[in-house]
Amino acid sequence: MLYRKALLCLIITLVSIRGFGQQPADMDTLITIPKGLEASMGKKITGLDDKLTRQSGKYLQKLSRREEKIIRQLAKVDSSAAAELLKDSKATYEKFSEGLQNAGNKTERLLSGEYLPMLDSLQGSLGFLKEAKNIVSRSKDIQSKLGANLEQVNRLQNRLSEVSNIQQAVGERQRALQQTLSRYTNLPKDISRHLGKYQQEYFYYSQQVREYKELLNDPDKLTRKLLSTLRELPPFQNFLQKHSMLAALFPTPEHYGTPQALAGLQTRADVQQQLLQRLPSGATGGDPAQYLQQQMQQAQEELGKLKDQLNKLGISEGSSDMVMPENFRPDATKTKPLKKRLEYSLNFQTQKSNNYFPVTTDAALVIGFRANDKTTVGLGISGRLGWGQNWKHIKTTGEGA
Image (cartoon, rainbow, N blue to C red; front, top):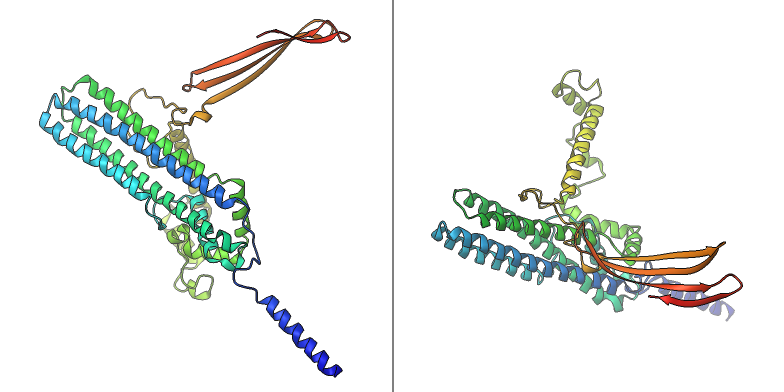
């Protein structure tokens, strides 16, 4: 009887251990999603998408109106050419607006276009969490929310891709318009003014898009915490190697990390020998690798200087070929939102009659609006507080406002 009881206890113990080891697929065993992450991420992505759509539509309307003014001035010289340009202009900007709106209806992920590191990380993280139910806590509660976040990120990526297409098309249209105007000699003076305004609007539109991309690449605290946790997981690393945009741009070769991947490749000695034969005699000093490294470093320094000059002009990616009007000085505040153009100042000053005892204290609060890079307009209020005669006779009184 004792033997049977011991055997029964052993069987029950083994079954319990086995049942504990085989947890349900959606039980959390590795990571916990930070509380509030889904709402925070959704709010940021949706907000960026709305701002990008609204500002793009606003600038497209400005560009369209400015182009119409140029064409109307051209009609004074060549009415037939102006009529054809006006017809094409309306159709083009309607197509831009339609493409911008339709981009928001696409929720599939793009694996082409401009590479944005944080956007790629968000897409990879959400795609991984959507499928990896066995390592995500509260999976039943957040699975649908993570899927919704992934659709929002994909929608934003499609919108950014369409915006890049619009920027490129507007830049080409600007150059074509200039080429058309260059055929005429006696153009009205207002054409130059409207063309300059057109170029300025295109410049500020490109600046606005760049600021939104920089904001996208600045993750909040919860997102950084999630990414830092996921990057330590081998399954997540394997997922990114197959499904990230970077992996699509630079796919991992077949049999990577195995001797088969080295088949047919040249050896280091072969490469050095070919470099010695092709590079100028005596330039390498016997070490072609060091020579190439020095040349690459010099090229990077020159590229960095050129990039700094472009940044000073406010010219960024997608807009480096834009034609700027003469004597145009970009206004860095023009693309800033209202809350970033407000400046606050608080000032305290005291007056004393003798020793170290203050007689009165003046306090002032000033709120200013940054109208442009050189001008700030503001309002302020100040008040004076009296402290009495000395340390033994302290008395606070309102002396004025």
